[in-house]
Image 1: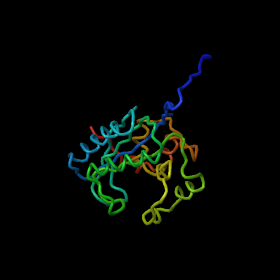
Image 2: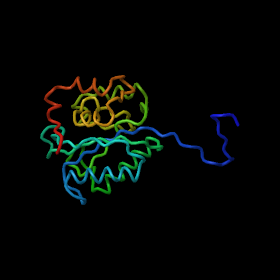
Image 3: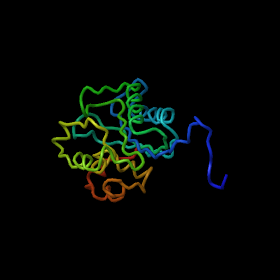
Image 4: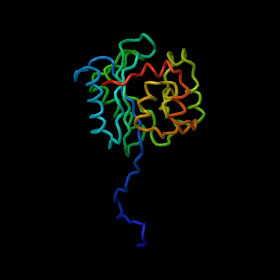
Amino acid sequence: MSQGTETYKTGEKLPQIRSIALIALGSNTSSPLGDPTETVRKGVLALVESLGVIRRVSKYYRTPAFPAGNGPDFVNAVVCLETDLPPEDVISRLHEIEAEMGRSRKTRWAPRTLDLDLIALGNHVLPDADTHRIWRDLPLDQQMERAPELLILPHPRVQERAFVLVPLADVAPGWVHPATGRSVKEMLAALPDAAKQEVVALE
């Protein structure tokens, strides 16, 4: 066998390709496991057990609820991890963890024990570039009324949300949005200073 090649027996499982997943965590109401800060900590541990190898965890930040006035302040963080799971399986695991933490999905953007958002997985643009553009450009009033039936990756609102981009800069400052070509630094720079100042690191 030549150098740099490998052979596998028939039926042997081939090595899985691991991708970088960026996952945002948020909590603004106590869960069965504790207050929002403790719930986010437990959420990070659950990600380790369910999805793969965590490479970096951001600082924890306190941020106002979104939309404004829609409940108590949030504790937010972002995790960078490696996983060999496809996007649909990652989403299923995130929903399972949310349910374990007492998350209810009755009302959109309501206060919640734990919110886990898959921000990006590798260079996936799902379901396709044109559909992604439609959801990325959706006006706020329509965002509040409509929810996609298909998985949209990267998260269509990432470029608008300081509470995601500020902790994202902690864990993946070199990440470039595969649909827009904009870096985390560029997306942050485009946000109003007032929005960024609302994201305050916890001691």
